Amino acid sequence: MLKEHLNNLVHKTLKPFGHEAAICNLENRFGPHGMRGTDFYGHQFPIVYRAALRNFFEFHKRLPDAKALPFAADHLFFSKFFRYFPTTPNAAGKLNAPEFLDQKRFSNKIYIPRRACVSNMPLSTKDLSLVLGWWLKLDLGNAAMVKVDPSIDKSGQKMLRALTKKWFRTQRYGWRWGEWWYSASPQHIFMEEDLTDRMPGDEYQLFMKWGRCVMIKKKRIFRSKNPASERTIASFYDHVGNHIPGKQYGSGSHDSLELSNHLDVMLEAATQIAAVFDHIRVDFILLHDAPALGELSYCTMNARIRYSTAELEALARQAVELDIVPQSEGRPSHEALESKLRQ
Image (cartoon, rainbow, N blue to C red; front, side, top):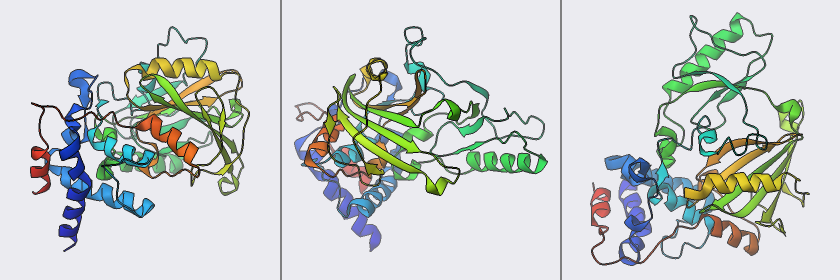
């Protein structure tokens, strides 16, 4: 009964695409290296799509609307399956982000965190590659990192080995609800330098559309020795730095924060990185002397986002909207996808 209900929901959410737009018309600027979620999942698409619907409904208490696409979240939801993203190199990998930056052009403007001990296998007793005081991170995933204590003992090393084995053994982050890009290339672990002492606590997220900045989010983190006591303030701006009132639910309290003098160089770098993406979010960590390049993100909060004001929601929607064009004669129909869903 539940399976039948979910099948009906799948058809209900996708039906408008078959009549009013050709999903196959979304532009692929990455050639043979471009891929969509429907391509990646193949015959498993119906299973993942149902799980993604549940995930969306759990947060929004409604289904994604394929016809009106009224909010940023709706565009992000469908982009997971129908927007093209590059897989070689895979922009979702932390290690790959610098490959999208013209490092020669920005060598004295954007800092690239130092990395070491890159490996495609878990830590082993024979080769325990660690840099004390640095972060041990998983390349493709979320929040999978641990700082290596300079005084680590054999017991601590054993725990790290077990942790990295778990990272490699478990299913890739995001696979089951549509964030397929974390599974689209080989997994790695690596060490990254600790920048905490060089950070005032500010992070910037630049929401880009075809190489143009649409929205800026600034986060200020008030750090504490007790992580439970840390506090986050976030504020939003348009592409020229005008403050936009409102907040993203679940993103910390809202306040108007002064923008950094380094914003211009962050905008310049993000513009260069995002030139071939119809949407991508480019993250920077502000250091005392320069911005450091962070991650590149396709789907903020896995589409589990809502904004408190109409003006802010409209800006966020503009940054992520799907470039859907009317279905034209001779284009592939939606029948193949409908056939998959009936399996």
